[in-house]
Image (cartoon, rainbow, N blue to C red; front, side):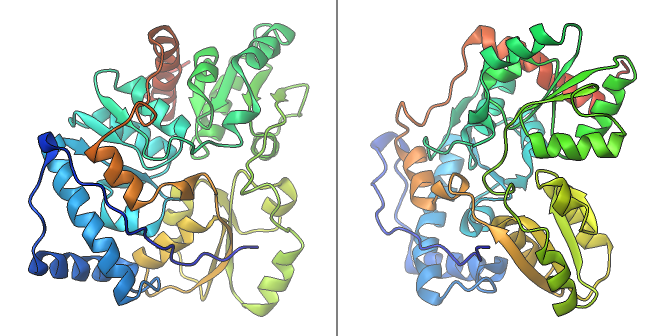
Length: 367
């Protein structure tokens, strides 16, 4: 179990090239920006005056460059709080960000998340420049399966539709029939089963087992799974739930669908990050515990300051690779490494599977 603490903000700032030059912030502007960050919730999360001053120097410049470059910054809920509260234009889970990026009119998308998310933005917005400030930000789930693995699964299960979790590479998405997220997977799989006795779900095995239980399907015979897991969610301790309930009477425990079936059976609510936030907003309890990546708990504290949270979380090393300095660098002088592109043929096929998700999740078409 790892608790989250306010991350340090690096001091180094590269000067902007001439074509993106902006004036230096005045002392008054920096003081105003520092106050804005403090009131946004960063002070409540433990950012001291020195931390806020360092962050303000970066966020002021990033927000100025955003306008100059006609850029938008989406931030996943697991990102660092100074990114979500300081520079992100919209914050959400994978589904929300994919949709909002596609709808955005901005010329450039600076994706504060991991590579598969930036790829999804590039797939849905082929006419936009997509930048990933932390090029090394990967995902254990996305890296657990290849396009060749999917083709092999399809050959072994002829006729079975493939539902791929959004935490997959563009090449894997191109092999799928439909993409799903933790928020809409049960709904979409239910609709696939209405037309097919067998469905392939990949790559998260634990999420797949939770879905099988929710849908009343037998793993292997009806729901074919892959052995991928998330390094954040796959080792939470189910046996600790009883201890937390004893220590915090009345606590509501919420777990992400990527956790083990043993753990999800011991909690009060199971869902995606957006579902978890909605549950906290709509219910009353003396305590809430969010069993997922630490960033969601930090965000929940800022959105619901009058509610009390018990932390049982883990940090995602990939999500935390993105910091304000990396975002500023990507805006000032994007390098080939930060530019995310997807081959046209792969993007075209992947786009169909992602659009199918929007259709099935939002009832615009029927199977």
